[in-house]
Each structure stands twice: as structure tokens, then as C-alpha cells.
Length: 609
Image (tube, rainbow, N blue to C red):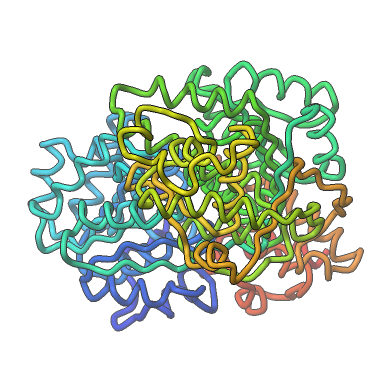
């Protein structure tokens, strides 16, 4: 990838992380958790950092790389992600290069020469390219400071996007014992975090969980009734916004995109059945243009760094809680309000079960994936704060959020304490080592071989819930999980375990309420601007539109995503502050010296004319 002129590969002697943040990237303060991670990496310590999407994880390794004496290798799963990261660094005056199969031979040679000559401190590689013998041998002759594993959940067998080629990275520690390791992800439950650390730096290092909560995202789930009507209702006042609509299949993706285009929306279809050129063109449009809807399968999304995605809608059930969290996390990366909606139906559940059953011959893996899906269904059926249920899956506790459908429009609740005690008693008396199917069989009095062999037909809870159907008890289990009374232990093949809250219900110290009908929110959604944008005057809003148009023009000239020029938050601050000269413009967050020199004059002209 070619490098722009006037790049910097070094900083002033004695520079510290905060001065790099201010004088290279143009930001005034670190976000929560960034300073601690940077400090530990600069000290040569190994770190696994779990940060919410939009939390600024890239700066956590880019700043140490800039300050360090030595080369940092960033391992990334996607070519597009590598190119966008390199383009963003170059735009800030930092020389960074990538080497991948999408580059011609001459560009790859130029990039490697920059690495050998020490002109760059950041080299982006795919795991396959990094773990090739020639590359490993070449790197062993260089001064390596750090390996950064981006999207680190891909290395774990417990992770939502496990990629076998990532597992090869577990051999790096032995081959390069002097290098620090930084692993970054937004999606890792406790089992995944433990597995990542054991693979990359066994027995060493620190795991920092910055938190999973994205309070700016409004969460909503509703049963699928008429997806066309429901989708148009969700999009009704979003003509000027960009977003993603996820679909389960390639055919459905094309159908939905065609429907939206017929209805007058700027919609693009994206799926793995398209050729590489088509997908790249579609992604470039989505990243550079305003008010584009990307209708896509899960082939789209990883590494997408468009900060102003205002909504994510799922027209089908995702594969797991982790997948869902990762996909909705692409909205609102700028911290401004964004909305999510998931539609799900019985056909979705059936298809997801079928996909899992057809996924290889590893029975243990299939069982884990079924239990992951059970956890997602429990989230869908939540009668309490939906965000509370979502974060509990990642072992994070919060108070009710006030920004989800169940908080804003609570469903009708029914006292289910007696049935909860029946089921919790069956879980307890069978030893908390069985999954939902066996426990439900016990409660319903099914004389299965498994029950008879273990003597569970002699338990006091055997048959106490025979009057209720199996689907009723399946839904009830999901609501107990959603309500925090039960947890599904994925590492123990999905066995049900009683939480402290569940124990209190069992002992009669608290009650349990459930909902007996699908949750359908009747609350009218009102169009919301960002907190900053909402405070703009009409004239300032017109200026913001003008600045966005200028940004898009510059981005197209350079063939980079629009946010690489300036993110929305920077343009909003410009429109409000109306800087009159270079000095004032330099005080705007996100305007570093390189961007000030490159774009300052043209943006000042737009602001002041």
C-alpha cells in the first residue's frame, strides 16, 4: 500500500503517551481504561484487553508502538480492516504498512523495505502471512517490540468466530520470548478470555475487562410478524442515517435489499456469494457515503470502523449472544444514541438448530453451540431489563438501564414463583449437572431411560409439572435464565446451575414473575439526534451538512473511508465552535498536526464563507 508524503515514524525524544495522543491523534484525554493498558504494554507486559466496541482499543496498541524502540506486528483477520487501519494512521502522519495478498508484488516489496529500514514501526499482517516460515525467519532478524492480536476471540475454541489459522499464533511466545503480547477483543466471555490468555501467554500477563456495556445503544427484540411492515416501521424516520440490516441467507439478503430499493432507500446487498470486487465496492460505498443501508449476511462487519452507524436490525436470529453483541456493537461507535432491533421466529430457531447439527462431527462442539443458542433465546424472552440479561451473560451486573424495550414498555407479568420452585428444585435435586431437557423430563414425569437409570423417578419433584407442556417448560427455563435465577454453564456442556437469586426463590425468600405472551413494544420511537448535534442551531446544522459534503469529496479523492478524514464528532464540534484560524481549529478534538496541515485550510474556508 503506497505511503503519503511527510510521514513521521518517530516522535520527539522523551515523548509520553499523552503527548502522542494530543500531538499525533489530536485528542485531549484518554478514554476509560486506555492509559492503564498503554502503560502495561509499554512496560513489556502481556495484556488481554476486553473493551466495548468504540472504546478506542486501536490507540491502546498504536501509541506504545509509536513510542517503542522496535517493530510492532498487528495481526488482523481481514484485508479491508488492515487497509483501513493503515490509511487512518497515515492520515495522522504515522507511517504504517500492511502486507497481504491483495497488494501487487511491487507494493509488498516497498512495504517490507520500509520495515527493514526502520521507517515504520507498525506492520499489519494476516495470521496466515505471519506464520509462514519465510516471514517468521525474516522477523527473527529484526528488533521486535510487540505482537498485537486484534479480534483475539478468533483464537479461542470457545469464541464466536473461531478461525483455525488463528490458533497457529499460540506458537509465537516460544519463538519470540522477548516480545510483549497485546490481545484485543470486544467479544469474550469468561471461558473465551481464559482460553485466549492460555494460548498467547500461558501463566503470565494481565486480563483487563473494561466492560461490555454500551449504554448509548437502545435494545429491542420482537417476534417476527410481517418483516416488511416491521422493517419499514423501524426505518421510518431514518432517511438521512446509515445502518446495517442482517439476514440469515444470501437469497434473503438480495430480497430485502431489492425490497428496500423499491421503497426508495439507498440499500446495498452484501454476502459471500458475490465476487471480491463487488464486495469491496459495496463496502467502500458504505464507508464513504452518508445514509446507506447495508443489507448483509454475517460476511459483513468485522473491522468495520464507521463511527456513525445509527442502527443495526436483525431480520433473523443471530447464532449466539456473542455474535449478536458483536454485530450490534457496530452501531453508535461515536458514542451517540443508536438503536437495535431483532426480529425472530420459530423458523429462525429451527434453522439455527439445523446449522449447528450440520456443523462437523464434534458432538461436544455441537452441544456447546446449542447451549449458546439457548442463552440467546433466554435474552429474547427476557421480561426484565434486556441489557441486564445481556451483560449478565458476560458476568457483568448493572441496574435496569431504562433504554431497552422491556424497561420502556414493560410486558405484563404473571406470578410464576410456584413453577419456578418446581423447576429449581429439580435442578438442585439432580445435582446441577444436567441440561434443560433432562430437568424438564423430571418435572413432567417422563419415564426416560436416563431418568430411570439415575433414580430420578424417585425424586419429590418427579412429575410435579406434568400438567404443563414441554414447550411451556422450555420457555420457562429461558425466562429463569433471563431473570438471573439460572445460568447455563457452557464449559460443562450446558448444565443448568442455580444462582444466588435462584436459591432465594427456592427458599421462598423472593418471588418470580414471568410473561406469558410475546413482547411487542407499542412505544413510538422518536427520532433522536446525538447529544452534541441536538444542541446545534439551525445555522450550525446547515454548516454540519456542508462539512460532511466536503469530507465525502475529500475521502473520494483519496479513496479512503470518510471517517479517515474526520469523524462525525469532530465535524459537529467544528460546526458548533466555528474556529476562525488554524490555532483555533487545532483545539478541536480529532484534529492532529498532520490533518491540520492537510485539511485545515479547506475546512476553515468552508466554515468561514
